[in-house]
Amino acid sequence: MDENRRNMLMKFPCLIPQNADFTEYDGYIQILDEEYRMNIKLPKDGKLKDTRLTCDWKLEQILKKYDKIVKQRLNQCENLSAFLEELGSIAEKQLCFQEQMQPTIQRNNCAQLISELENIGWEKVVSVNADFQSFQIKFVDLKQRQHVMQIKLHSQHPRQAPTIIVDLPVKFDIVWTASSTLLDVFNQFVHNVDLYQDLWNNLNELDRKTWILEPDNPTFSATNRRIAISANASIQITVDPKHPSSLPDIKFLGSNQATNPLRENMTSNLHLWDENEGLLHNLSSLLEVTFPSPSNSKKEDFSADCGICYSYRLGMEIPEEVCNDSRCAQPFHQTCLIEWLRGLPSYRQSFQTIFGECPYCSTPITVKMSIRK
Image (cartoon, rainbow, N blue to C red; front, side, top):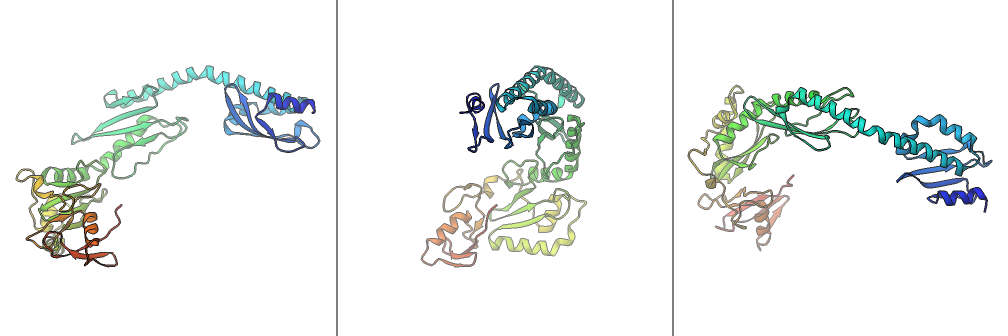
């Protein structure tokens, strides 16, 4: 075997010849304790200066400053093995230099971040992780609601934008440039929080003065509420976060006997909706109801268990299918009722609607199957 080829196999065993002529190698080259992917294509005349060398992005970044030297060594080295040894030596020196500079860079970065946190105010800093790459910063609005923003710095900070996690009803996209600071992000967060003050004021009034069946513990991002009206009826509202005073999307839940009058009232009273009033006042006028509140009732009065599985929650479901006979008015989970009806000899289905009898009183009952998000 040719001496040069033997040296290649001995010194760079992870670079595998791709043909019988030994004009192409593919595999890995080890530098210090790490392996880097590399592909080498030699010209047929064997002249190194025309060699095509490709490597993974990490090694490419390491050698970026030495492009001229690499080309010079290709021209001057006697064989491929000697060139690769010199290439490894160049990369090792650069890696050692970067390692020596890293503590200084880290100290400078930490000092800069500390200065940026001071500009925000230490009283607003909830937490800082040990490597100074993640932060939690709070903002307290005019109603004393505390909003927390989580910041995770990118490995290429500040050239790349950090990852931001917030609890807001609309996606939070930050504006970031290489000269941006944590204070810039915080100010953008505060601006967005201020945008939704009317939304939260209206929803908080509902949370305080009515029985909210869902969600159990509303977050700032939650724009929906299921509000109890009676033991047999409730409404699910979804509020537009950008126009919280406008008429929300309203879904009626309960037996037809209990919800039909509410639908009729809404149709008749749409002209009464006043965007200068709060959601609670408008909903009461629209539906002609006085909502039960924590001051005069108990939540258990409006959260009856499913008549089939005898529980209130079934995964993400609560009982919202109700028998239309007012003397029964038993609620069921949609899933439970569908399974029950499918087991009856009289089971009948038309498109997405199932027909059957109430498990309790045998009154005719229907349930529409829906795809839950």
